Length: 115
Length: 113
Image 1 (cartoon, rainbow over the protein chains, first blue to last red):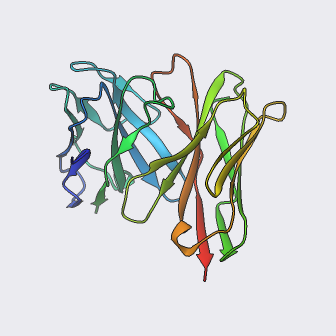
Image 2 (image 1 turned 30 degrees about the vertical axis):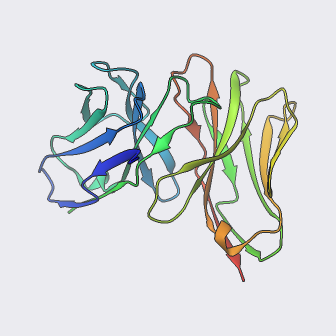
Image 3 (image 1 turned 135 degrees about the horizontal axis):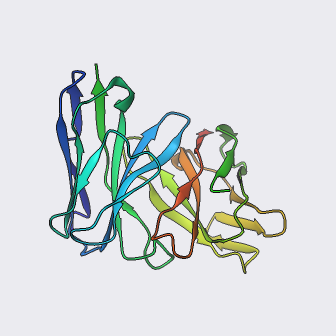
């Protein structure tokens, strides 16, 4: 049982380049999330999805786009990478609510460096 | 209103000691307070959680204490072990928020042998 799988694990981009981070979950979860983690800043929500074909903005959505074409996949895109987007990106999934019987399940992250 | 303030930022405890991490919130609509544990190179994972109608919840060596009137909650790790060395995040959730947890900034715990 793989859980939440993120690809790639590491990536280095030059300023202005684009890339897509892929998140796949095999738990049939409705909800999926993209967070970024920066030192001293905790986990900040970028975008989230409550179902196939739906997406919504989180706390820090600028510079990112997302798509949820299939229930099991949630893609995070950077159209024109900036050094401020250097971070560790985490994908998570859950059943609706994030409540005691539906905790967030996180992947192991993608470490992105933008030079 | 939407923030969860977590302290300390880092914590060093001797093996066998008690680790205490504190969080405070302002939004009284929050009705679920989980703690997530993150080991280096891994994603966070749910450790323990509490609802505001309970003042304490214990699971093994981990205890959440909740003070609704003060809008504060804390994680206590009894008999801390080197294997507990990790980053701990408190979080809060309110009904209708579509599962969007509000996370604290995290506490890096180091347990020295």
